[in-house]
Length: 259
Image 1 (cartoon, rainbow, N blue to C red):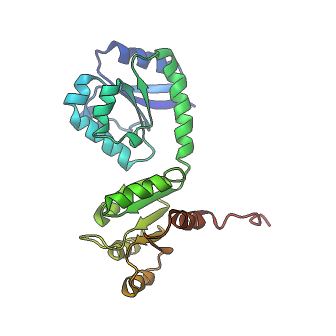
Image 2 (cartoon, rainbow, N blue to C red; image 1 turned 60 degrees about the vertical axis):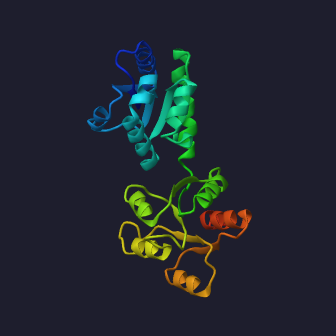
Image 3 (cartoon, helix red, strand yellow; image 1 turned 90 degrees about the vertical axis):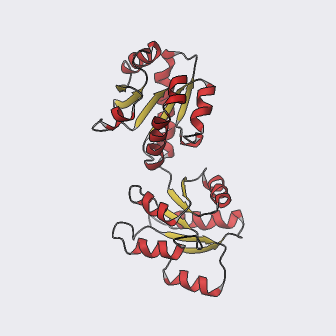
C-alpha cells in the first residue's frame, strides 16, 4: 500500500529535491510544501507521516513553524514526525518540540538511497507502538508527571497535562483508554474534572483512576461517590501502581476466555 508523506523543505534545496525523487520511487507518495505554516494549513488532508528537512534558516527563523508542528504532534498521536538535519539543528528544534515527540531522525550527511528503506522500517516500529493503550496523566506536579511517564512509557502511550482545563481541552480532540487524575489541583480539582467528564456524552465512558496524595476520609468519600475505577495513593510503590494499571487493562484476559 502506498503511504502518503508530507515533505517540508525549502524549494531551492538540491537535497530536498533528491529526497523527494528518491522516496517517490518507492512505497511512498510525497506531497511537497515550503516550510510555511500557511501552506500546511491550506492542505485539505495532512498526511499522517511528515518528513521535515531542517536547515539553519528554518530552525533559527521559523519558530512559528516549529511550534505549529509541535502542537500537531502533541494533539494527534497518529501523526509521526521525522526530521532530517544536523545535530546542532536537532538541538535547537528539541527546545520547541520534545525529543520524545519525534518519530525518527536522519542525520546529514545522509545516503539518499537508504532513506526509503529506513523510513519504512521506522514506520513499522512506530505503528506497532500505536497499538499500546493510551493513558492521560493529569497532575499539576511536574515531578509526578515525569515519574509516571518514565514508569509507564515502556508499556503504554502516555500523555500529560498539568491542569483540569488542559485535560478537557486535550480530550476534546483525542481519545484515551484511561485517565490518571490528581485530586487536588488549582482552579479545577480532580473531582470537578471527573464530574465534568461524567456530564459529557462524549467523555463520560472514559475510565478514571485517582492518583493522589489525599488520604483523608472526606477526600476518599468525595472521590468514591464519583465511582472511579481505583483510588491510588502517590505514596504507593512503583510496583503497586503499575500492578493496579496493568490489572485494569489485562485482568479480564485469561486462559479461560475461550471456554
